[in-house]
Length: 310
Ligand SMILES: N[C@@H](CC/C=C/[B-](O)(O)O)C(=O)O
Ligand SMILES: [Mn+2]
Ligand SMILES: [Mn+2]
Ligand SMILES: [Mn+2]
Image 1 (spheres, rainbow, N blue to C red):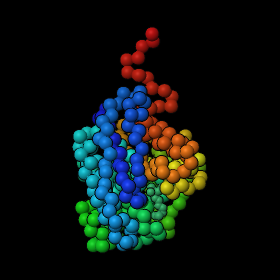
Image 2 (cartoon, rainbow, N blue to C red):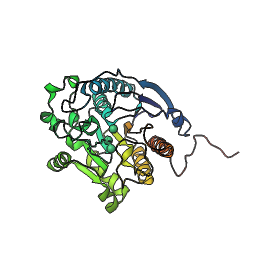
Image 3 (cartoon, rainbow, N blue to C red):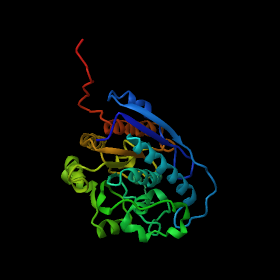
Image 4 (cartoon, rainbow, N blue to C red):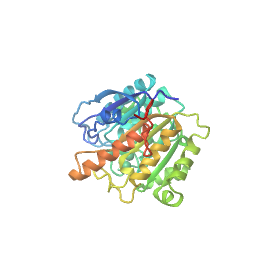
């Protein structure tokens, strides 16, 4: 069981074109009355430089360098036996968070909560945006589909996931290459259709049953805020209608917390640079509520340690 008394919050701040700025919610976690002491390890800053023109993907040098830095920071935080929270920022940072987490916890399993599968390879991506490809860099079974020689800025990266370690929840916008990969490898995935059909409890329970049947593996949850419906998360880069309700997002967070196995959390794609003022307020509020629920805040209320009636 992870020591959840210390949480390292790495705010991934960067102006690299497609890695966007982070939100700082660490102070909120300490006021969530969950008894955590939060260690904020500050922002990771990256050099911004003119990157090569698109070479399969956009900004390969900047994102390669940034994710290498993220990997080292997360690995260290996990080795310090902290439940490590990384706030983003573009979902490309999960190349680093999952790689770093796996270096310290090779037996991790992964819950990918997202409207998108983010498993395009550099050869299938329609946009070249690396935030749609992170998983392809990490999965052993896709290793031979990556043009590694053309992407030297990722030469530090070793695939560290088995396709069977992953469960998707919230999918509703996949590209052809992604659909093919999910089908070919029979990856555990629950789109919004299955959420509507089975209900969110059944979906998250089946996801955990698939990737962590004995309940003995550290969990990495990569929570893309665009998994939740744009009505509550308008300030994000790739909104897709018909998402998880706020309540379903919260249920996932509370349910995963109760496993006691959450070891690292990414909360990504919060982008306060897009959307209306209300969108920004809603999105950050949703991110904060999901984050604090992942760390133990309960909608039923929290019994404070030692609380006595006056
Ligand atoms: N599948 C699209 C959209 C990717 C979305 C990435 B996100 O989930 O991190 O927002 C692409 O590859 O360009
Ligand atoms: Mn993005
Ligand atoms: Mn994503
Ligand atoms: Mn997404």
